[in-house]
Length: 155
Image (tube, rainbow, N blue to C red):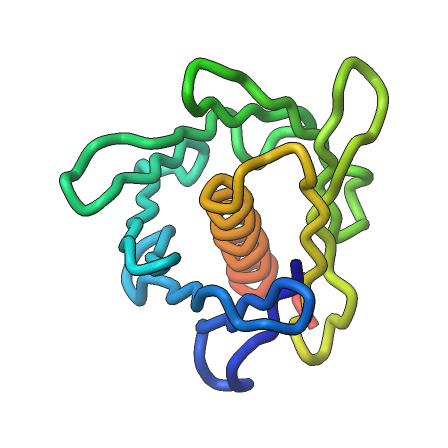
C-alpha cells in the first residue's frame, strides 16, 4: 500500500494498493486526526489534546481501534481485542516499525521527503487498521514538523 500527497499545499493523501486507489486520507485542519472512506464506509480518526492517544470511529461513532503512547519510542494499537506493537526505527528516521517481540514484521515509512510519499507494509493488519495506522503516523509526523518549525529547528 502507498500514500501520495495529493498536492504540495494540502494535507490530503491518496492511498493506493497495487496501483488501485482505495481511499483518501483527509487530515483535519484544526486538530490532529482526519478521516477516510474505504469501500463506502467512513472512518474518523481523532486524537487527544497531547497527540499521544488516537481513536478511530465508524459512522455509528463506535470505536473501532485506538493507539496509545504515540510519539514514544514504543507505542501500541488495539483493535478487535488484539494489541499490535510499534516502535520508531530511530530518532532521525521517518519510519515506524510493526514488531512481534523484537522482530520487525512491517513498517510505515516515508519514501520521498519532498513529495510526501509513504510506503505502508503492514500485511498482518486488516485494511481499515492499516489506514488508521497510516493516519496516526502522518499526524505524528505533521506534529513533529510543526514543533520543529516553531522551535526554529525545522528546515
